[in-house]
Length: 204
Image 1 (cartoon, one colour):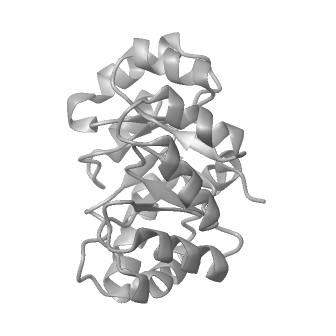
Image 2 (tube, one colour; image 1 turned 135 degrees about the vertical axis):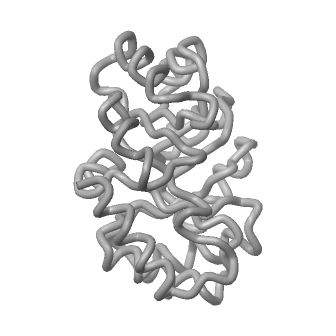
């Protein structure tokens, strides 16, 4: 099974497919997989998200597929039943993290302060989602990096673009979650392929 660390080591980008429908999920997922993106998140406020997660896990066995906007421990169990192996949240809820850890699922809670970051790590978080990144500039990432354990994965999410990705990377970001800059409802697979390539190139 692909771990979060291994997937991000290949390409440190998480695709956030907010608003995707089950009937288009596999086509979009395949394009991302072919473009080197090994981590895909379907936010739970998308249409029939569990169906999309189930379809993606069956079609892309080597990718790490999971859910975003996971706010309750019971949601973790539903994602697990659908085959998801990743839990992402906009906030830190210790019960959500512990539910994921108990099921052997990587959990990436959202944090914005060192206090939240250390509490999330203590609860068993596999990585930290720095959210919203618009409120956490590269200088803040560098300051947090200085005090957190060196092995901590820091993933800024929100407002990340091909123009600012280098500044965050230089500040110590381990990877990034990319949402509407990569996929918006109505985008075709070809459009997503082009944007996926642009982000991969910006990292290099």
